[in-house]
Length: 248
Image 1 (cartoon, rainbow, N blue to C red):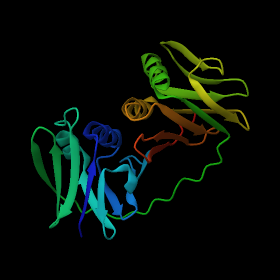
Image 2 (image 1 turned 60 degrees about the vertical axis):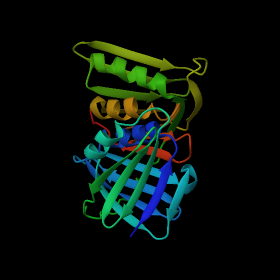
Image 3 (image 1 turned 135 degrees about the vertical axis):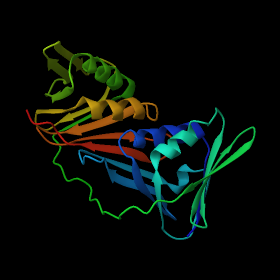
Image 4 (image 1 turned 30 degrees about the horizontal axis):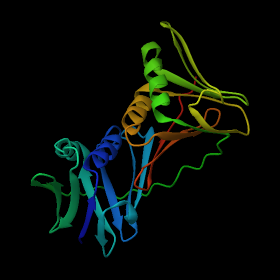
């Protein structure tokens, strides 16, 4: 098995990997002639990450047959922290090893062992969402950081008029409102009012890391159902998270 691809912006690739690593310790990339995919659950099975990158998102891409690449994300993250501005990153599998090259003022090569991870097939969660909100990701990040000051659970509410992020505890209450005139709300569709609560530990890890990748985030949810957060990757593809609700 073998493949090779070059991603033109090493820092953006690093942000993608760090976003996955916020929830996942080990997982398998599925590399095909069409592109790269990854779908995995966090160890507690509360959250799922779903990455899709078409071959067109890469500066160079070659893969003749499907290749499964099991990796440790902590090890990969440490390597990618060595990336500098204007670096490129190259991935290649050959001889049962993963070679990562950081290409800049010099070419630095790292070799990682591949990990044999059990092949669990994860279906796309089937949820009848009743609210869909597209917002500036940095505005959502600020609201999540505000909520962390107050509580360890965040509540999402969508009415016909407004989307709100709330938190409440013995320390106090928070409400961040996003109306149509706020400038942060790009698209808004509600077929039925929705209210659901989620872990701030997970939500914080997701939003803080992924806001570096995408300017916009699409949030889809329904009352007491999982939430889907979709970040569109500028060079092509998307990173989607599904997070189970906290029942009050």
